[in-house]
Image (cartoon, rainbow, N blue to C red):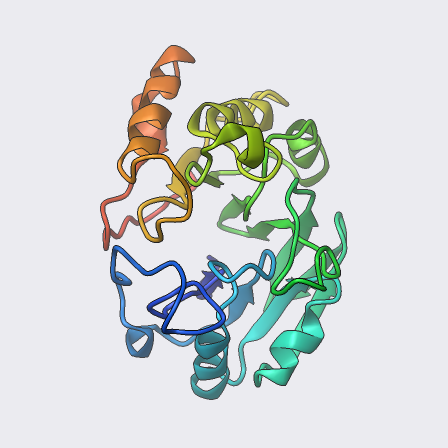
Length: 253
């Protein structure tokens, strides 16, 4: 965005776990090798769960991209600083900062944080709205459905790109308070776009098909998201279920 490279929740390790010999293992390799990344300007971290915050990845990125600016939720800065990151900004919900010329606003999410048994909810979790002259993008991070999606648009402005999770949702009795299911993801998109009369943004579906974290079949989230999209009568060209490794040039129009 704006000529800058922005990376969200980078995890390049084999497992989403505190150790690499146990825990959820990748079922899909990273589409791009960590060593092949272009020079990074900004790294956004939504929260501290192992499938979103990976120590080995942070350490390597801190070595190879020492000038990158890291934007993290409240109280998470000390962790990434101990892993080598240098320039770090912590944000509370609705706080904003300027990172390399990008306006970054932390947005509410319904989730939780923990990396062990004694640190539950000791650090914050969030999404982000990132704005440049070329457009505005919303990265939801991890979230359950909540009533503030409309407020995100009202406060930050209409987005041109929405990056929304669609996977890791079953069983619902447990997961409904931390992760949207595909139908709720489309409802959240509808809430985001209900304010104002801006053109509908592109929605990129995230958080599926990489780690087996929950009970639903790995290929179910995109099928349910597409079905919900049709039920809402939304333009099919506005939903992007990316192929692994697919690149798309995003334009504001």
